[in-house]
Image 1: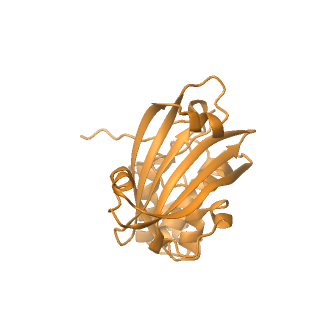
Image 2: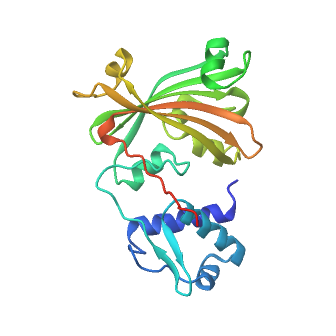
Length: 239
């Protein structure tokens, strides 16, 4: 299950995005947050550290923790965080649905192994999903999951949220996702499943995701229509 500090981080993040703690205001003091969440000071500090890492707040010496996040005018997928499609849609106030296009078990051959990072002979679950929101098919996800890590997964669950199932039902702790972001020409398959309008290129995010035991359990390529893609990161200049 997720650590307590992570749940507090998500709650504070949602309050910041909802305007409970507006841009440039200070969030409650550490002591008040300890009382509010019924946890230790160290737990609050860890939650605040994650908020700072993802660019939501900044610690001001002698004053407190100031909100530095502002809502943008475009739909944002926050790649500094491991966020589900459902969470991203809710954060952007959009109605969203997922259509499962493929759901099949395969054994990794050399082609699949080279592409995904799994080993030849690994039993994998291949899932393809089309993400529909804001009136159009905008994202095409092509995924391979380590079969032993997703026991009981069904197409119905995949059309809702795979990560919520893994964390809530299987008790997996998802910890790290290594990501590569590229621009690629749209393929005939992309044009078949996505509403691309006049766009001939896509933003493609490759995710290789690991659980708390360091096991690589997922490789996914998310193919985004570019007008609904924003790369959001936070850079910190060293002293």
